[in-house]
Length: 221
Image (cartoon, rainbow, N blue to C red; front, side, top):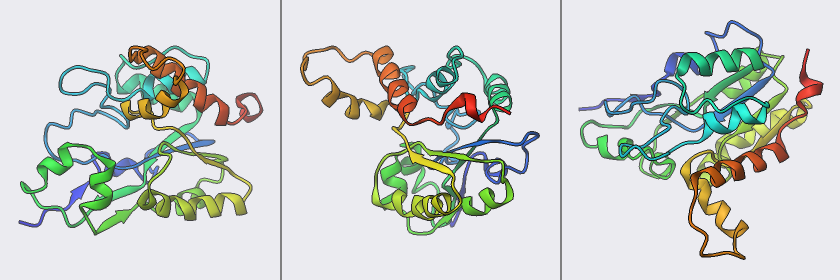
């Protein structure tokens, strides 16, 4: 049976529900509404995997970029309050995957793999982020939380072109997911025996983000 898979937070992707004027837009990839065991309660909300191990460090790293304490163990109310206070909007590149079939694709979706999203499906309905930027002229800073991949780059390119043409700060930043460890290992080549440590990974992501983030003082209004 044909069963399109929408983004779990579909109604938030177009920023229609914002009650503030954002100056920063953070863009992810896709968060499927099914399978039903998707426990995320908000964007970047799968903070731990099914075994209870750290899975995504977004809500640890982002608040610390802004000089605040980690919110990794908090709930969506706190995350939304943080975004409102710091004028941050969040969306994703993909709105719907229109050639998904259940239960055939439950396992593919349940892996939450960007590679699967990019290569196992052909009918991606994308979020019109250029239109979002046109409709929210207060947004001056745009970050894609993914650094590579031809499929994702093809979706990022028109956003980047629009940003350059309109004097906006737009850049791809290191993924906050556990896969950031692959970027971290070359950083630690001098000590290849070093035990993998989640706190050090979080700090590595924070360091990389801080290098690319806009000047927070000049963006205050």
